[in-house]
Amino acid sequence: MQIIKYLMLVIILIFCTYIGILISQRYSNRVKDLKEMKTALNIFSTKVKLTYEPIPQIFKEISKKMKKEISDIFMKASSNMEYMQAGDAWIKSLEVSNTNMNKDDIEVLKGLSNLLGKVDIEGQVSEIELIDTFLNSQIEKAEEERKKNEKMYKTLGITVGLVITIILF
Image (cartoon, rainbow, N blue to C red):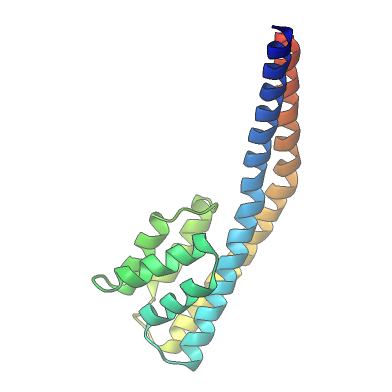
């Protein structure tokens, strides 16, 4: 009977530690998602300037090059553009996206919808550059949050697991 008790205590400790690690990974994944989105927007800007391809086609190409979370945003926006305006399709795809970006990050990216498909190439490129600047500040904030919170949640998970284990022991 004692072996089962000790085994359960070890499982509780491991489970709490795992939860702390999962929560801490959200912060590093947010930074990765923002950097990936920045890369995708740079590709978009370059393709708009050089290829003169339609936006849905560019978005499909971008979705093939990015990791899943960011790829889904561009793929959904591309498919939504079949029956919506480009800006509305972009907003809708951001709202249903499953990324680690927070509300502020999404709001910054929604700013791209204002001129998407409505102005000439130079206007779109300047809008992308503006969003790129905002993304840089969001990446800096995300890095600061990651540095501050990542270690804290890992430590908190271990600590809570130890406290529960000691109490139940």
